[in-house]
Image 1 (tube, rainbow, N blue to C red):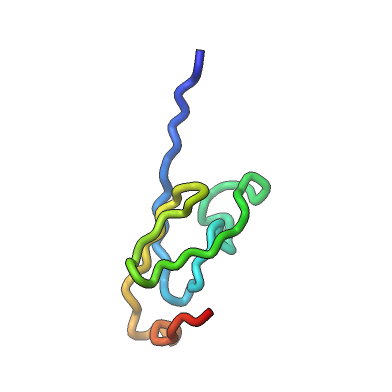
Image 2 (cartoon, helix red, strand yellow):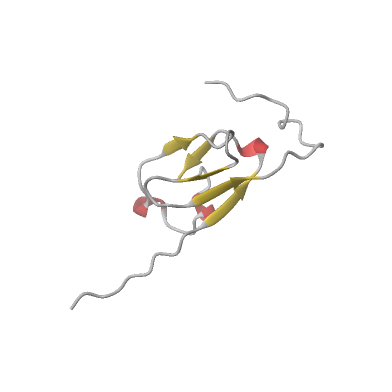
Length: 79
């Protein structure tokens, strides 16, 4: 018999200072999983819609509104 496995979708809020966004994040503690169990790192374009899901693990990322005291919030993203 097959066991039902529930995958909990993680929701992570990031600031503009944390851009560019990659999954898994530079700090794997954000996902709560050991580094060896993670998928290859991918960079995600979140600026246009303020939210994006990782195509590998389905982690949902939300870009928080810029903080006026954040010196990085006015910096445009460039490739």
